[in-house]
Length: 495
Image 1: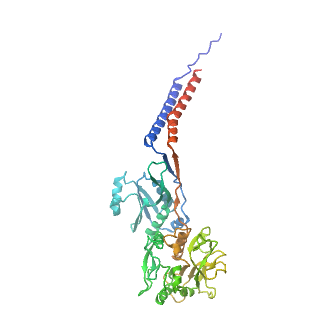
Image 2: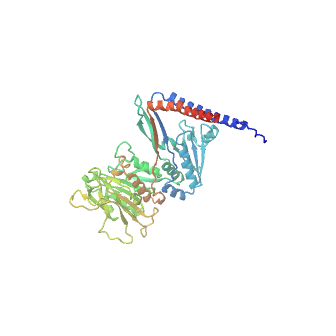
Image 3: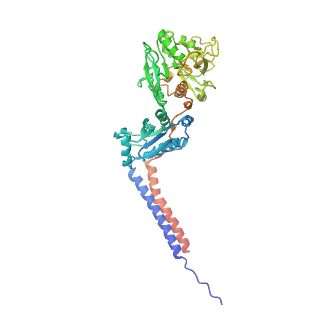
């Protein structure tokens, strides 16, 4: 008779150790859940829970930045002098790495001034501005020691204040809405790699917009900030007793209200003949005073400026403005705006002078922006048609005249208030200004859009009742479920 096979123990030492390890892991998980729940309950006992989770999605660099990086030949060291626990540190570091990958001449190093005081002290010996107590969270751009410029990292993110719901007392929290790191970094690279600053002179003495005024809606301080981003320095200019300076790269005529003298007009014309660059903007407030003289000067360059304003009843948000949606498809200043709109206020019609013959040496005038088909001049409200509202003018070198500046260029717009502190942020006004300035300065690598990156914030709101429910789920439900599953497994093995 065959012997019965010897039965093996149901639990081998290997299986016993495996089960013990599983039980230990389960107990550790339960303990971790209890600790987290206890932390939440102790720190948020009386108000709704509010968690903000900001996406730090990787954005590609803009076409404008890429074009600039392709042309940059200087060596630039970028030092991220930063607290690595800052919310936007990883975003800034990732963006700077994109710059480095696109142009290896840009080198990058990160120094946490809290965790690495030795290296921070060495940097303070190199960059004296780091000795200030407020010198924290900076991005330092150094072009071969010749151009050094720090960027304040805390100013790269724009916030809005939002009231905390459910709080017993009125309380607000700061919510990030946009990140402007690329705009600031590209402008700083342009600044430190440029051999000398570009100057824009603002004509003064005729009631023009104040380029230094940041308080008034009619001031031009925000437009000057745009110039600074493009490494253009603004200065005032009076043509009484002096000519246009030799270092004038751009002359801005920002909406004079009263007439220029014949001498001033001759000096502007001479500047243009020598290859100058002019941004001429008309102000509706000048109309009661009659022509300001620029109309006659511009006519010699093939530009016709109307003496009355344009109204467009189908394209406005108020009776005084015109929403411009139609642009030239060929000119680089407005080609990026084909799917956008700019807002003008009481603009004059500005177009090509049809009666002027177009020779080989004549200025080339191209109309840039247009009203809708139902527009009319205020002086003739029954005559509806499309009116040009802005033009670009370019003229090559004149025979027998040596020009250091190159081709003469102008942009003429029938309104000046669209670039003031209030309206420059409306629609694509700011973009138009940037494209116009860089076309006038003959910088095609900067004729691309460069805007802020949006910051998406997710909010988790929990009332006190919901918080209590979550507490019991974390403290009782999850551990109880684990124990119940463990008990079922034990009963199955027993049977």
